[in-house]
Structures are given as structure tokens and as C-alpha cells.
Length: 145
Image (cartoon, rainbow, N blue to C red; front, top):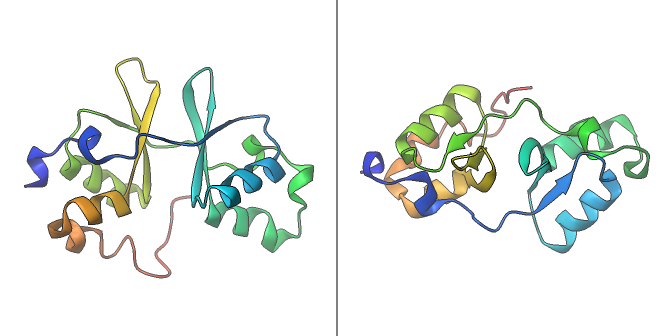
């Protein structure tokens, strides 16, 4: 069934975005105010990175670094793995599992950011895909870094 559903049909379209030079204090403020677990970072309309709650914990909190002393590009995950909006959800899940990521930035024809596909998007839209995401969503799963 997921082989017939396109990424653009279930992705999150309203994505919060900051720029490379945005202070991480501002990033955290935006994430907190909007109850976000991730935020995209872009430059000239193209995605350059993603900052997740995990990135903030590992790269700032555990290191004792003040968010006001760093900018987005200093802690974002990069390179990022993107997927075309016309790809199938099955292809996206295979890519997520291969790279060990729970968020896939989605790009349009000109490689501009048009949305993000998350493991949660897949789980809620296509519950039959849960077994395919089980390992990826397990506690302690080794993420790509």
C-alpha cells in the first residue's frame, strides 16, 4: 500500500525554518513556543541542516554550552538526506531506515524545501508501516552523525 502513496500526500507542509546564522537561543525559543521536536535550517530557500531536540541535548546541554553563544549552523545535523516530494512513502521509509533518521526534508522540483516527512507522519497515515519503523523508533537506536 505504501508503494502507492506519495511523500507529498502525508508530509508536514507547514515547516518552521531558521537560517544558518540564527542564534541557537532563538531556535530553542521557536521550538519551545511552537512545541516542535525539530526545526529546519536553510539558506537561499534550500535546506542546509536540521536541528532536533536530540542535537540540542547532545551538542549543547551535555557539553555545558550556552545557546546564546552559538548559531544554528554550528550544531545542526549536516549533511542532511532529502527526498523528492513525488517519491513513494515506501522509498522514504527505506531511506530513513538506511540512514537512521526520523526526519526527511522533502524537496520540490528545484530542490527547495516543501515539507518534512517524519516517522510520526508515516505511523499515523499508514499504520501498516509500523513494523518497518520499529527498529528506527526503538530507544537507543544508533543515529547517523
